[in-house]
Length: 278
Image (cartoon, rainbow, N blue to C red; front, side):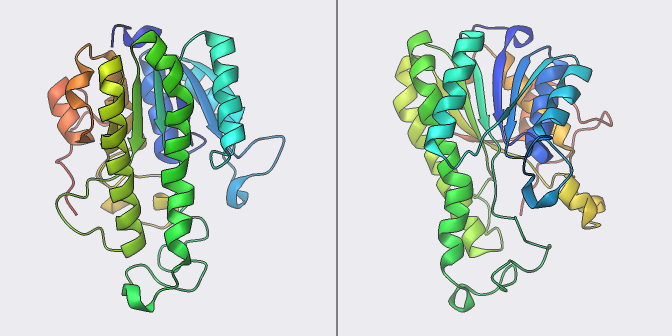
């Protein structure tokens, strides 16, 4: 991209917590203006009654060195996503980076059992089929709606980066038929978007973290099994945003650990984890 990371205007969808918040903070470290979105707000409803809000995320962006702007949005709603992007373009004049970190597939999941009573990894012939649509409606559809909304302005500017937080599905089964299928769909969506956007100077890609120490992972007592922090993912996005040759990654599923070795950034502790393989 032609714009240096310190001048980036970024929109991070699903940034009230988890990987999305880490991405917002990684961009903030580089001095970016970051619009942080999600459904949880101080003035309204909160996802699963959790404490984190988009206002908290915006304050964290400011503390990390960026400029944070909270926006409450249900990313499953085409109308709300279109409204969000229209507001951002009026307010800032452009969107350089748009990242979808929206994933509602784990809502109500306690680490072992889904709300429908099925357990993670239960053979597909013993599972209700409803999770197929749920995972796509809360992960794949939001990514498509965001890309569709930001693409016209990016195409007109002949620059921009669109990223979908996903998982590399090329090296093994991810352990659950619905999760695996949704991540495959996200990766293919990134590939397809890249084919249509590349002639216009816009890059689309999928981003593959390892096991990330999110709030949910820590609360489940699984932090020791995590390979990286949410901030590591954010630093990967900041490095991509600052790369004038980011188009070399178009359509690919890029692993955070591989990007760290390419661009020279580290995780919060100064280390670089090995690439995670399922």
